[in-house]
Length: 270
Image (tube, rainbow, N blue to C red):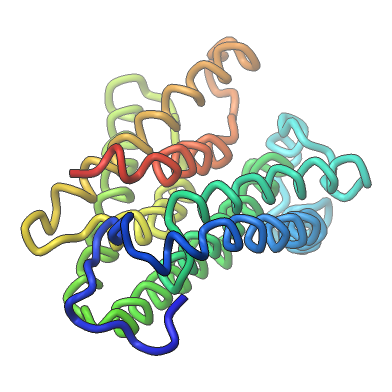
């Protein structure tokens, strides 16, 4: 880790794999973040359930009985479900630590991973993505990227976070419009577009370089969107048989695509 702000000479964008601090702390980071991920995953189910019930359960202001009946998840708070989510979150955290390395650069990734997991649980329960998680997650991700840009004495790199956020959301907004205009279907929801604002920020920040201020982010978010779209289409084909008007939770697949891109970010980027 860093004892203080990094010098301006330290590389940004796919922080140098050969740095000795990274090599020394990677094993410790993987273990520590994996353990923290288990704890975060253990809490995400109850947090999601409490948040969702206050907004979408029967009698709540935004309750939709039709969507609730179609949602595939009935409750994430059983011990079995919480253990499964905790293990998955721990593995994701360990994988991110192994890929990204130890340091301030990791913070927006683990924050977005928790937000994405919690939002996915709500989506699976009620086919909704609450603004407190989408907009809140985007604000937190951008704030952490801004703090990281200051820490690494590279404030210009914050433009990468903004670029990644807007590119990811823009891609999904384009898909949303395409589905509605061409197929007359709501293939995506605005909640998915808003969640992409959070997901794109750390990817864009991590891949930003002065030589390629946009291309790195564009490549990584494109892969994330492609993977999320492909897996969601396959799942929809199995679960709904593309029944017209049948709602489907895209959020979990969006987050899975993001995790795929984050774990392979050094391979996918410029």
